[in-house]
Image (cartoon, rainbow, N blue to C red):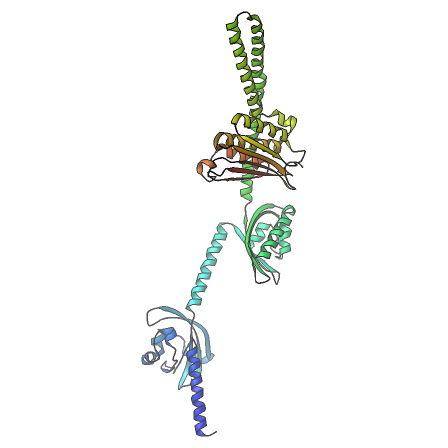
Length: 469
């Protein structure tokens, strides 16, 4: 190869190196041992803000980096020092973090090569990530929460120490989906497994409450929340668990107290009903008999006879009202005739008294219900119908009683003026509070739907197992 060809090859090589350097985001410098620049890359301004000529004019690399980055003795013995994090100030005063590699060379009349990469954004992201992790850790600690992380393709799962504690699982137990489900109470296991499968199939969030019984045989209530991730196929599931055993204990105590109050209420209703029927009712009956006898004695005295007849009619009306109140306080026919007949009777009575059309719809329901459940459903229907008659200004109402495989369902709807269910006055209404307490006593659920001028619907679901079926 002649001199012309060699010169051309050299120029092409230098051009290639120049283009390569310009396309890089890194900055490269070569200095002598005393730090004097012998080479400055042309794209130095990308990181430092100074142009190539401005950096050359500085003369010494310490003026660009702000301090001596390395010890020459260390570099001499090692030959290369990698992954040096160093903070600099750019031309416009910004603070940036560099990741630097320094190496002994013999090129461009220099002896030390500096390669600088801007990692400011990565450091900020790392800092933000650590800060978020710390916040999450503190939040989990404050909530006494535990976590799990399931890598679906590999099947690997990790539990936080609190997960082992919450599940009552030995710390040596190998975390896996099967290990998790083994800790779930047998009565809740299928439901939890279904929730996890459905969340994974749809890459959705999930939330469920269930009981766990761990190696220590202690039973706890756990709230599980999390999210599944897919990329065409299942990838990952993250979860958080919170021990809600204390909340369930408090709710159970509240339900127990509410049950005792309701039972005391029913006992007092029964006593008052008996007093009205056996005491006041019997006295009215006696007065009616005495007035009938008196009427026979005053047949020849028309004015007095007329007064006695009016008195007899008033007593009969009072007796009928007393009889109605007595049965409303304690519906004896509920025990004698059953829930369906009792609902027919109260619908008929309130329809006549309130001037409202009440339709009763009965689908096939179990023939046997416990007294507790029958009374709860009856009282809820009674309270709902009283509210309709008193407050709704409705022309029509419907009471529907039905059952599916799991629940007995009561629905009471009307076409009245409706209301805002979230209004403070509504939330504190004695009638709604009473209904919710009765629903809680039979492990049921109540849903209330209403809007102003759009009527109201109350639905109550009671598990059939609770009903003794």
